[in-house]
Image (cartoon, rainbow, N blue to C red; front, side, top):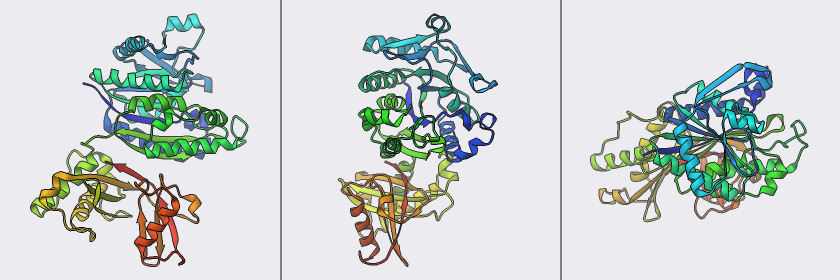
Length: 445
């Protein structure tokens, strides 16, 4: 049985290559760092197949294009660098399964081979929307087959249905699969871009990034296409297909980077399929259970992903029982050598040392539901307008008094509520002077 491991949003500007950018790529360092972080995650997951959805292959109004040749090749000759050449093995077996299922589900699909491309007078080589993300992937990992798709200008519901079909094909295979949604965001962020400036560009980008951060992918499928058209984007349909493929799955989502150089929005993000075996949650659970049963801390760290052993971040561990909070303790900044140690210590603290609750007993262990929030470094802000209750947590401070509230909490629906609760936790009056910081989290549950 195959597994769909998750999806990734990659932008695709060739200017990010040193050979093409000739120094201009330095204006997009956040994007390059974000793409490298995605690649590191992909390498850790070791997919056997990558399904890539691009806006810049052969595009049809009435169908989705799929490449069928056994060997898929491409280069950057259109950008003056024919020496940048690439070759990939097509997962022909999966392609055939997608074609068969599409026929069965009455989803229009156009098969692109050398012969059909010649007849239709279209380009059969891989496009830059595919090659830019794969160039970054191949620097770290190349042990995969490729499935190359170009979205069609179909109704969003039909694109999402095709995504659901992809997930079914993956499950019936023996493959470990990720999806790369290739796409830039608004091309109208400033007059520097290829289109005229539009105030809708920033609005579009912020909404897409917020939806991904919250993991509410059904909102992608139902997104306002009027806003998308006004923003001048090319990534929404790639995301709609990806959202369809990931529907009905529990996701751990993270916006890794966003910036808008050259008047174009570039976002990098990951949407990882999580389960009861999520390694962050599994470690928190094992840590508290061992401590409750034996009084000793958990020490088994073998087979944890590199990110948990090498990265240092603040971590909050939350416990619920029958839907009610049973404990929550965390660290705003890292105090221990890595994320794994932070989880181990804070899981025990949440269950044993939260002063609001009695210590967890062994009889309760089977009733607990865990979540682990990994915090990213806080940044100073000067007004509540810089907050977003779904995306950002908040820290309020006055001298040694400090209060923190995580983002996207049930029952906290406004920034005003978020600040009010944080002040109360800190023991700071509303009329006192206080400073604020915001931070982002990746939630595992």
